[in-house]
Length: 316
Image (cartoon, rainbow, N blue to C red; front, side, top):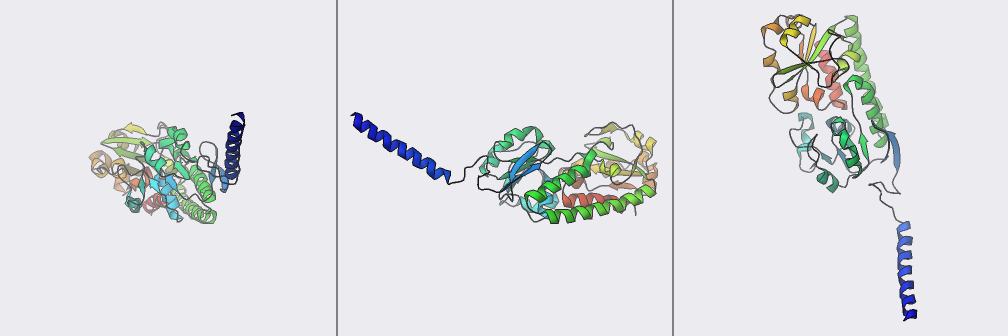
């Protein structure tokens, strides 16, 4: 009996050893990065992260990143399609691109089912970073409006390295910076001032250089008409009496309803006597910006070009 036990134990030990030996020659998956994968360490908005180079299955919860990747020939496999997709991303309505929930309410099960090699998120999902990281390597590529070009440039550099598109990204950044310099030169030479507003369901908010639309002031060169606006990502709620009293040379308007697939109400709301008393109205300098690009797709390559062009057209 004892001899039989020793024989069985030996067989089990051999099997276990053989399994280990075989597995040692195979790639070991850890959070969707394999030992045989080529990886790279990049720094996102949060920390240094190790991610695979040229990941095949990518999920992005940021429309700006999807825009940027699409600009250099990279398509994502999954994206948030609950709600309304921006028109510039219409092709992703196709069923071959998986729906992974909403911008603020991700579907973690759908994301996990895709077995992604890389997940990219931004500020709207920042608090869920750890949960995403349990599924796959995750990059937090946020753009703070107060530091738009700094964050945008960093994000593009990261994408260039991860997807080996550094030359293409550099070319796009060079073009964008050239356009910014051109607009900035005209604006600063004229010492033009402005205020940036957003309309949301009948409410009017104004934004400082340290908030969502800071690129208008910091990169494109407009002087802020009211330097006392509170720095808030959601802006400071004001009235049309405020607009008339400030009387800026330029009024830039983002329509949140138009940006998010709802009703566009900005033009009708601005059609009042107080607005008509301003120099901006009299000189044709009330500029209705391309709202999806400014609000939900900002941080992309095409969207950033559109944003700059919106302002460029207004100063002619």
